[in-house]
Amino acid sequence: MRSKQIVKETKDTGHSFAAYYKRATSPLVVLSLLQEKEMYGYEIASAMDARSEGKFTISVLYPVIYRLQEQGFVTETSSEIVDGRARSYYAITNSGREYLKNTLSEYEELSIVFKSLVKGETK
Image 1 (cartoon, one colour):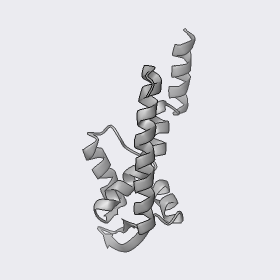
Image 2 (cartoon, rainbow, N blue to C red):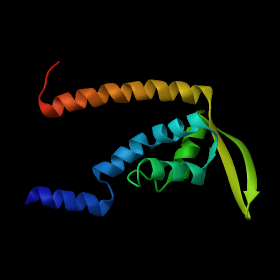
Image 3 (tube, rainbow, N blue to C red):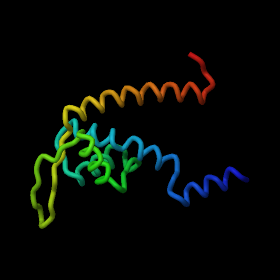
């Protein structure tokens, strides 16, 4: 009974495993998409939604983009007004590419270790 209560409490607070996972990996997703081409915010969100079939969405995308800008991994390349709304385009920087490469490598390594741990396997 206790485990069901923990899951319910976790859902109620919005801190599910999925929420933590998305929060941790969302910068990598944004950088990966920007590695393909410059995009504006809605375009990034739409690409995430389409590629994940709606399973990976970020409700707070702009704070992720702004944090990546502060870290020097993303830059705003241009802005325009479309249908009365401002649209800013973002691009990955060289340091963003390097960060993405290193972090994806680390992610892949940790994923293998995690699978071994939960399956009780040793290397």
